[in-house]
Amino acid sequence: MKYFTKEWYQLMQKTGFDVLLRASDKAQIFSEEYFKYLYKKKEREWLKLQKEVSEVSFDDIYPEQCDIDTDGLDLSVVALEKILKAYNEERTNALNNWVPFIYDETVEKNNFSSALKYNTKDLMKHLPAEILSQIADIRVFALNVASHDVKKNVSEYCKNNMQIVDKTIKDYNLYFTKYLKTNKNPFARKFSFHDSKVVSARSKGNDFIFILTLDDFLKQTCKIIFKNYKIKYNDSSLANSWWLYEEIYNIEGGYEIHVLFEKNSKLKELTLTAEDVIINFG
Image 1 (cartoon, one colour):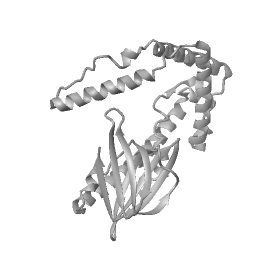
Image 2: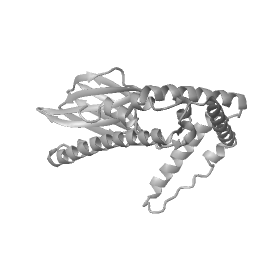
Image 3: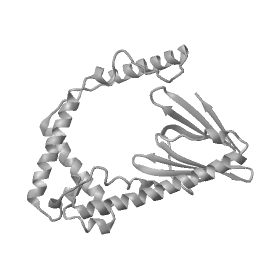
Image 4: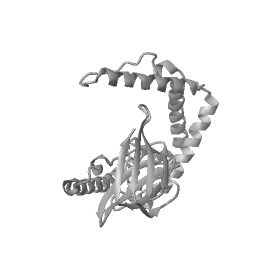
């Protein structure tokens, strides 16, 4: 990847540490008493939320009658019937797999404790050392409370990361807009599959074939055929991964395609060349 690298994607995950963070003078110094107070307060909020979740019924999520808002949409009868059919199929599948959430205070207290431990370790892993050194109690920070100075520095850190992330997206979009003006193969205009699920990725003769699920609701699929391909780089098996970002480049005799995937919380890359790319939507 030239633009949407693993490093770039990982940086994008470091742009929201300040979203829920609030400032408090009590977070300036380490205090076990303050941590225990804050822990109990956040735990009560968590238990309240989980109890409310347990009271949500299946019909609240999937009403028997699908109410489609068609304002501003020019839907044909066939299109509307297709949506309703897809909804009914989705509802039936969901009902067959429906497991009511039973609220258990003891279980949820353990879940809250485990989540805090996980978040604490994750923050220690991903926050820069200079910010970690300013935090009096990482447990308090993991409960979304920090001193005014720390909150300011974290917000600045996230802002700087976002600027880099946004610049990369802008740079690629500028490149790709220019590319489309000179690219004669129409596949490039359709070659965008962000958040699609990879059903299979395999070679067949001289071709490499992807089958993607584009929409879980409408069950739309897509088949991508890379004609006369050559793999330049591939991390490992891509089946059941999520397609994140793609890049297209012209080379002599065809195209070079870069794709970034995510599978089981790990990033994977694929770089291949092909004489042509064929896209068929199902």
